[in-house]
Length: 616
Image 1 (cartoon, rainbow, N blue to C red):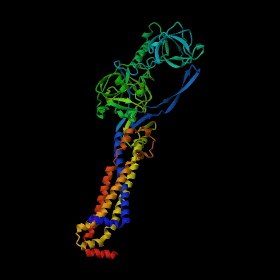
Image 2: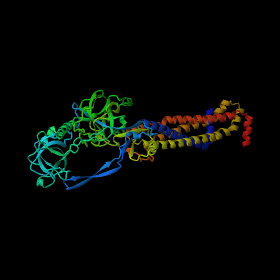
Image 3: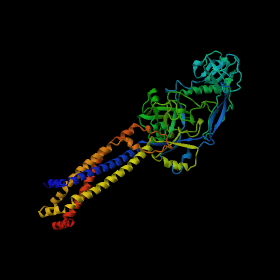
Image 4: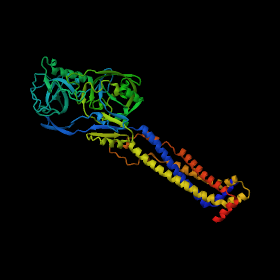
């Protein structure tokens, strides 16, 4: 009965009661939206922090461009080409400076060629067959300053289908080539260079011609110094005379033929300190499809564990837990493995697989690795500096005992595809500020964070907005509760005095004063907080990404952010928050009501009447 009378008393002033209800709904909605967005922002920030990685790549810029010329027999003129020049090749240690807050320090990766005749490889049928080592005799006496026809009499290595066939030949890059005699046999490394040209082709259909190139070596010391070729200036082709293959020049052709046959039985092994430092894995172009990634403990300890490609595993019936044998015979400290070994089996080398003595490098280290994971790649270019290579195997860098010191056939400066490091998410600007103080302009640093910086910027903006909403909602709520406590409780002194004089107990008087207001407060809080929960739950993931992200040091596109992170954004937190906010409002309002009621009930009825009459 007392509760019912209290509610009736509230509806005797319907305008004030309705305004109180409406304003409590609005303040509850604001408070709930703000609290929900704040909690959601914190949750997403933690999820992104654990899921995203910020990787920096480093590339040394050339100090100048050198222009060289090369004779083009087809054009009968010199062709100009350019090559980058470096005064000094920076060591990776230059990236270790005070204040560099690395999670994983910078590394310059080499890849190692592993001789693997026991495995089936994607490159087995494509092993540099565009280049052959061949013996040939010209059809007629000639000077090969244009396309001339020669008879291929023997294939030492390469495409055996050319043997006993006629092809077009031109010493294409030599302005004054030596004459050829039809009754002599010559040997050369031959490769496609362009279409046939000159008067010798007559009415023949234009086709590709072969050009010779000298078998130069490109072995380097551990410090990057090029070792001197024992032949000094090898010729593009030699006459095959009795005993030729016992000479240094002849041995080189035999050795190269043996080395070329190895390329089809070779797969690249890349040593690293963390899988995520490889850009294809950081970008999501490569991913673990079976087993597990190599753990950081295994990387640091140099455990004999590895990741292999799904293609390599399928071609050789390998699975997680099996072992792979490696026999490393040369080191490439210049390029990423994908530069020389394509995903589809194509091969292309900018160096000859011969050491400075003109011999095939010998195996310098053998290991047996346990497969802990198998990775796959998304469709992309078969060749590319930032792609995985065909049959590429990933191992801990520390597991290779003779790393970067044996049979180095290629050496070069830091490149984005070979040099990388990891820093904390969101610290790009801080890192670059410290790096620029080092005063080294010859190094370009590019960051890949899969959009983390942009997401974080959006989340921070959303957190600021949520704090503002919470503050406004809380301020309005406190003001409303104080105001309407004054209207519905403090101004009811005469009513309380009458009830006390009629013998109503303090407890019942307290109930009479607060019950109606409590019901309005409870209803408004539940409706407002529920409305705020529904509204907050409808905020889409895109609202977290409206930001002015600075792309100065990063070439990542927001579209690179994968859908698995979008799914996390849809997990609702709105309704649990709505309950807590409603409980908070009701508890705060009830506390204010009880306090004001107790203050009134402490006075005697006559004092209450006197106070009420004074105000009137």
